[in-house]
Amino acid sequence: MASTTCDIETSLTTDYRRFAWGIERIVLDSISNHLPADSKGSKTTVRIKQEGRWYDLKRADPAKPAEEVVFEDDGAGYSAGLLSVLFSPKAADVMSVGQFGEGLKLVAAAALRSGIDVEYRSKNWIAVPYAKSERIDEHAVQRLCFHITENGDHIEGSRTVFRNPSKELMREIFKIPEKVLALNDSFSVIYAEGSSTPENRHATRLYRNWPSRYHPRIIDLGAGDKSLFIKGVRVQTMGAIFSYDLGLENISPDRLFADRETLLNEIARILKECTDHSVIETLLREAETDRCYRFEFEALRDRRPQSSLIYADYRIPKDDPETEKFKELWRRMDIPKTQTNPWVDVFRKLYGENAVLASSNVNENSDARLMGFNPVKLNSDLDCYLGILGIKRASSLATEKQYRWVDRLDLTPAETGMLERIPEITETVLGELIPVDVRVYSGLFLNTGREIESQHGVYVRSPDGQEYIGIKQSQLQSLEAFASTYIHELGHLVTGKGDYYREFTDFFIQALTKFVLIYMTDKVSAGDPQ
Image 1 (cartoon, rainbow, N blue to C red):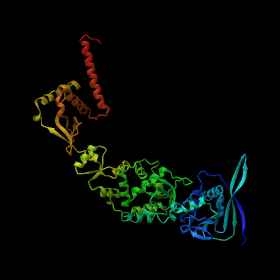
Image 2: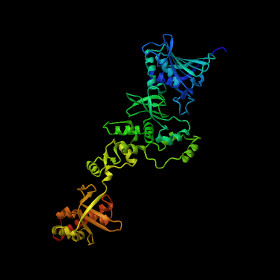
Image 3: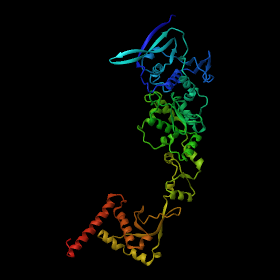
Image 4: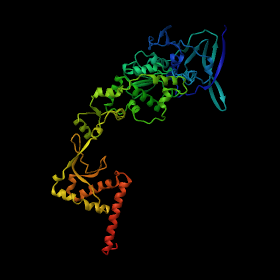
């Protein structure tokens, strides 16, 4: 069959997104189109022609110039008509990298700007981009166009061909294994959602029946910066403990960055659901250090999501016909109700069964140690998350307090005489005499034996309705100290309210008003109107 040619014009100019698209994006987006998730094939190949011979990417010599480079796949291919429109047939496919319909055209525009000779091939057509000069009003523009040759050689899958590539382009091509996991043989998967570990066997059964989706992974790239990959292609470096390969949709068309809030929520979800003890142990060990920031700790922070559906929208796509099937499967899953949280298990394994979360109060930590507990100081965000999981805090251990009551027979005559002034003080403050049960204690002590020095008095209402005031024995040494403490607790007894309630405040305002009026009346009676 004879070949036919035609030209396709696009609505893009060669300046479109020029500041975001350079050599790196040309290489990464070109190779992304040939990954199995996008091409629907089974393999991706990078071949380099050097000194007239073809080599696989990993066998080519970075020190030698190249005559030609081919990215190819064995997938279904695509129609040349897609070159003219901003449309992506992969937009509804959560497994694919391409979602915006811009990749081929932006690669072509960037290649023209950079003087790179690029050619696209698929099925029975070949496309070569070129720029068409136009003037729109006073603006001179370069419209992106493609010259198409159809009914030529038929190929399986698709190809992107670079001829006479520059040294700069070749440097980026040789970096592909670092930035594309499908072509990286050196990275390892530390944890994958739905992985078949003994701790995760129930989740594995569940994900096997879940509709196709991209399962996020925690990965190890070896030495160097930690990186974020979106569907196998590197997007950015990050100050994190691990590297991640996620299936996020909320990224920029240039794939230069992912939405931060979405990223934090997704990493938090992965870590909270992680069942791999080695991952959790690494996080806990890192939390012992004084490092100022780790992305994982911010993710685990108790943050209010922008939307309460942010996790659900990702895990269970809206209007998915498989959703009800999934829910029914979940209801029928035989998941043990007694299974403990892996985070709690690892915390106990590392720090012991008596480990508790340390307090910022050194006295509370000392009390915990005296009681046989091991206070563990961790990053504040991770500390908060472990507290939510139910791990006790040193501060909560000190809540058991005991008053050591003193028998009245053991009081000195001076102390007994101070208590005998209670009716006088009560009638003066209230304007009437009411019976008040007052008891004396030597101190308030924690169950460790440490005294709480600041506790001078207490109002107690027992479950059976009995009310009494407790006064610390040391307050009986002076009338001012005793009266101050007794009147304060009397306010609680009369109002039944705590320190910060309005009724408690009003009690003292009324008492003060009464004293002011008595004072003013006494001055008038004494002949002093002022």
